[in-house]
Amino acid sequence: MKKLLFVLAFTFIGQQTFSQMHIVMLTGLNPGHPSGCPSSLYDAVITQIDPTGNQTYECTEGDQQVFYGGDRVIKLNQIFNSLISQGYKMMPNSSGNLTGSGSQTGMWYFAIP
Picture 1 (cartoon, helix red, strand yellow):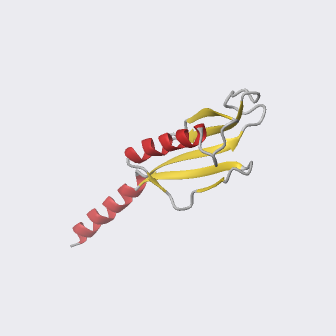
Picture 2 (cartoon, one colour):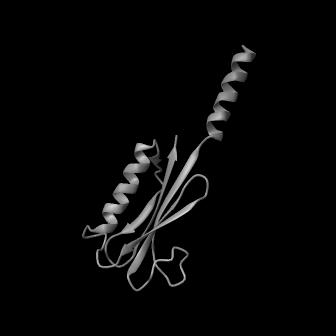
């Protein structure tokens, strides 16, 4: 019985060790942003941070607001669908203000359960 308990405890701890987190952020673009997006053409950037800590940036055009559809919604949808197809699930503490009122920011957390 002790051996079974030890195996179950080890399995539970092992599963927690292999958890992976992926972060997606939509933020306004400031001059000097590390993405290298020219602020004259773009006004927001989608940043992804994978489980190994690598950052990727995707520039989004300023004339297509999230509230009215457009390029940002399409790109976010593609990113979310890609992550979900890899087995990630969106965490409930994700947040975003995508109301189209000029404050278009968001941060979403995805984890493999």
